[in-house]
Image (cartoon, rainbow, N blue to C red):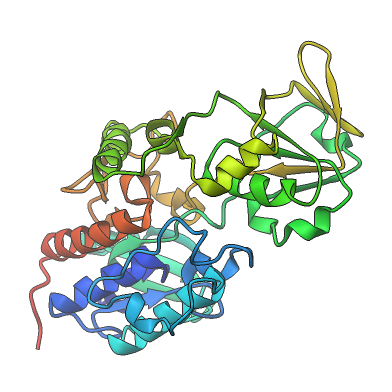
Length: 369
C-alpha cells in the first residue's frame, strides 16, 4: 500500500522546523519524502501568540534554529521589539531559506493505525486525519505540537462560583486591563513572576504558589540546564509524566524582580483552599478579596490526537527511548519533540536532529537524489 509521505512532521515551531532542517540534511525533500503541517495561520509557532509586553529584552532567550542565526534577522535597535513579531519573522525567513514548504492552516484531528486484514504490512502505515486536505498516509511521525494549545488550570472548590474574571497565561495581553482591580496570581514559574511584576506596577496583587519558590542571584549556568534536562529525561525514560524544570533551576532574581521584591509583590502565600464568589479562602479561614484570578500554572503536552495509538502508561506518562529520549518505546514510528527533556527551545533543536536521524534509520530511508 503506497503512502503519501514517508514522514509527517506536525507543528512548525522550534522543534518541527529543526526536524525539517535535519531531514533535508539527510537527503529527504519537503513535500516529496516528508511534509510539515501547522495549524496556525502564519510562521512563528507559539511565539506569535505571546503577550505584547514580552520583548526581546524580557524573554529568557531566543535560541537559534540550526543553520541560521536569529541575530542576522534583527534590525539595529530591535532589543525592545515584541517577541510576538520578531521571532515569527525569523521563522518565516528560516522556512524560506531552507524551502521547508510548511502547509498551513492544517489541524491534525487524530492519528491511528491503518488496518487492512488482507495486507499485514499495511498495519505499519499511519492514517493522519486532518481538516485539510483530509487523511494523510505516512510511515513515521515526528510530533512537535508542544504545549501552547493545552493550558493547565487546576480544579479548586468553588471555582465555578467566582464572579470575577479568571484567565490563564495564554489569554494575558497587558497589565493595564487590570488597573483598579485586585489580582491573585497563581503559579511559581518564570511566566508567573514576570506577569506578577508587570501587574503589580499598575494595581494590587496577591501571589500564591503550591510550594515555596527558590530564588537565585547567579545566572542560569550550562550545568543547571544539564541537571534540569537530566531530571526530566530520567522521568520520561521510566514512563513518568515530565516534571517541572523550575524545581531544579530556581528563579533568577534579576534587577526587575528585585524591584518587584522591594514593592512587596514577591510576598508569597501558600495555595488557597477554595474559591468564593468574591475572592479566595485559605485553610486557616483567612480571606482575600479578588477581582481577577490569573492562572500562571503552565501547560500540558498537546497529544490528544495521538490517543488512538495508546502511547500513555497507567500513570499518564509515555515511556521514551532513543539517544535524546524522543522515540516512543512501544511504537518506534513515533517521535515526540517538545515533550519532556526537549521542551525547551535549545532542547528542541537537539531533539529535532535526533528524531530525524533515528526515524530515518528505523524506516530504512537512505539519502535520495
